[in-house]
Figure 1 (cartoon, helix red, strand yellow):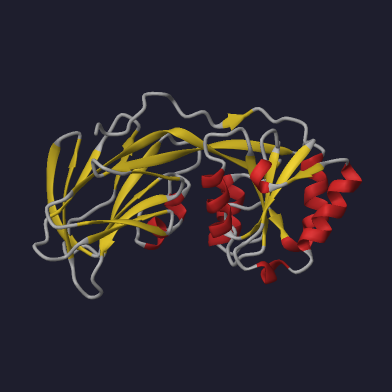
Figure 2: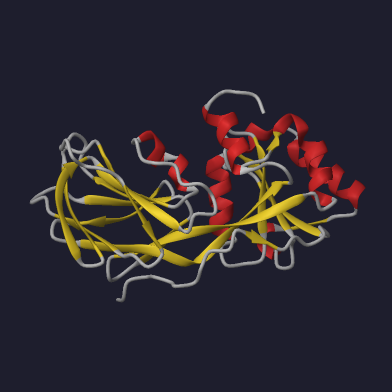
Length: 281
């Protein structure tokens, strides 16, 4: 199977349409949101917005996501490749991908339904092992499948070998995912609008391992060089497959973009400051 790649530039913004129809994505644990569904239904009725069943969301302008970043990623994956943009009301711990605090649900949704939102197009990364293909909005991680055992990963870029490293794993992150596991592992933050991705090693057994930022034309190959330690393939936080010793995975930017809606004025840099510096907006 050929390596996934696309030469299409990544647009930063999509056209905003008037909100006439929405669908709703609740969290996996409904008790987290209390009476939020009833509150949302009341605002939708007040604004003349139809609420569609999630299974029949065709023609919806927005998916209103009630939850944290995990629920947001699930929604972005679900509507990937469609015209449905996802806007989040934060009922999680961090909620970096959301733009409406839970205690301002009514105010925020009134603004959004009146057209006071923007849609950003978030790039994706794709991976294939020659049999299966995976698409991530945040990141694709190859990690040791055996607790306490070090992975040994060989890597190359565009067919040029760059050596091998003992480590806990490798993160391949989009700009969206650069503020997630990649940030915790010491990788760089990529501002939204950058059409690139970052490769970061987790706890590398080396003094010289450094993250590498790459662009859309580049292809990365990761190979499992350990004699007896398989690697887990984890896509947006969910385990998808295992790479046995000797196996390889090829990764590159994908052609699809996720559609993230945010209230107008809620920029990446505002959320970054609020989330990671603790300073007020």
